[in-house]
Length: 278
Image (cartoon, rainbow, N blue to C red; front, side, top):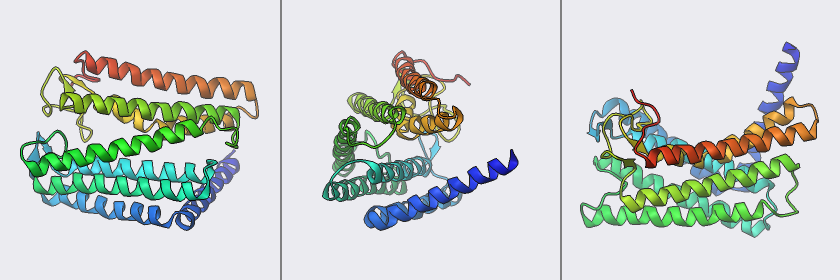
């Protein structure tokens, strides 16, 4: 058993290294942008240690830290999908450069605004901050169009994956689009909390409200469904020992439950109810 675990760990390590190598060679610009995100992350982590300024009850560097970590994960995930999805080569290059540029500028704006000690979102207190927020909205909109492109391509007969993985991708991309709709709701109400003002008591680091509804919860789980759902499907496939029917049931069932969880947290937030009351 221990020997088997060692082999699995070694195999996963080799797969990860090979994937990173492929991404760096196939999409060098995106790869460099991800590396730059790690530099931004280091700057933000140092900022949290040496800078005690607060914004809405939270250290100013916490928000860009969360955004940068999320950005790294999303870019790596989409880069791996690009390796496997049946886009034309020129299209792959276009998408890789586009998502890298869009994520780069969004996180630069969030980081710069943190350095200035002002909010990056819903901030229209002066023309400069209003333009920065509007630019972020445009970039998010363009990013969502690319995500929709992936969603449509998930139904392509040229996608060379097993049935359970294809459906996990389809539902995962749908969760991202759902998260984008929730993001639109936040922009529409110029805030993320429901029933209480933004800020106030929240969960450690995440800062999800513990006194009112918070649309960021469903938004977060929706965006990161593109990692969680396919990973769960892969895990079920390794544990069901080639039992195709059971793999399909577990993988698709988990994906639908995950989508239901997002719908529940969205509904809960809209009712002004916190995920956890502390």
